[in-house]
Length: 217
Image 1 (cartoon, helix red, strand yellow):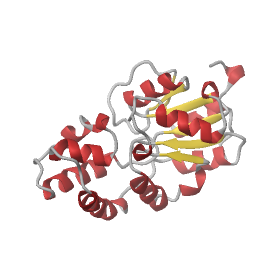
Image 2 (cartoon, helix red, strand yellow; image 1 turned 180 degrees about the vertical axis):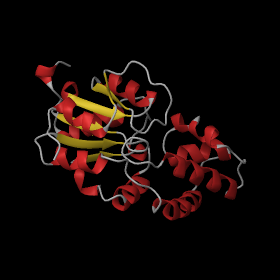
Image 3 (cartoon, rainbow, N blue to C red; image 1 turned 135 degrees about the vertical axis):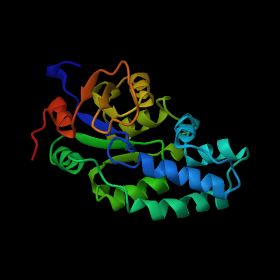
Image 4 (cartoon, helix red, strand yellow; image 1 turned 90 degrees about the vertical axis):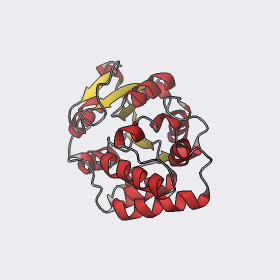
């Protein structure tokens, strides 16, 4: 995408991109799975299963059975306790405020469930900044499949070629490419290892504003 054709919408990944929740929620998974009779896992084990999809699918993967409503309630009980320790990355609230005050549409597509996402965006004070939110339990195929990202673009009323998808992982880059969006890797969290083939890289949240031509407030 050239400077003459800047994105008219930005869609964000959530965990590891907007909020520093990855380590907190990896521990939520390990505690919940152990409490439900599953194996004693490392956080690396959990990361390796994120491709399975939403929280229900990740729990099912490790429990060796379909996660029940009671299993999810156990997971959420740990999540509620952990949510108070989750914070937005430095510069993220200011970036979102600047985008919201501009003519750039802002969306969110995360592999997390609606319940977890709403819990965290409320606790971090950024719930009002998104015109459209799609979560992992609202799509049939998880990242890197483009279903969820395409759905957000549809809700925003913006063609995918005019959308930048900002995320911190290879799954996010591959999802953006599959959807026909600009793939932007967020480097400020530094938590997801090497990411290849992104169209652009943002060292800081303010770099996202530069990408779309919005002045910091």
